[in-house]
Length: 81
Image 1 (cartoon, rainbow, N blue to C red):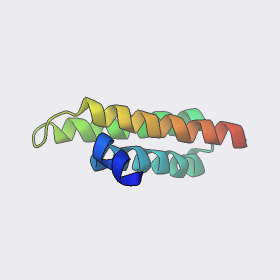
Image 2: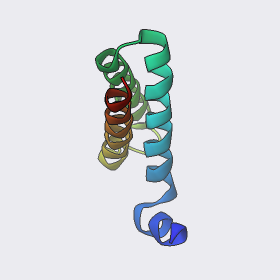
Image 3: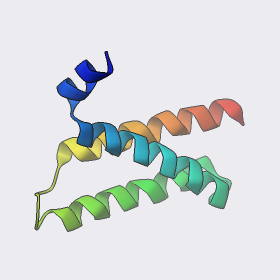
Image 4: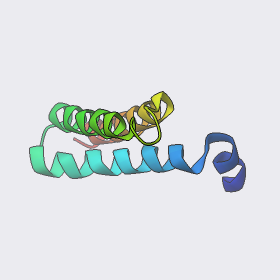
């Protein structure tokens, strides 16, 4: 099942999802505010894709994976607070 997901979505997108979600949790430890954490990680993800534009191109799919990971972590944080 994991191989099917990785083949369909791609390892890169799964890593974007996981890293952005993890980074949102870390940002929450710093800011102690879900909204600030979400905004900070969104900015980091967009800047990272902008910098990647010269090498691998701006990846809208990567941004979507980032935002999905961020949203998942934000929902978890809101449910736990």
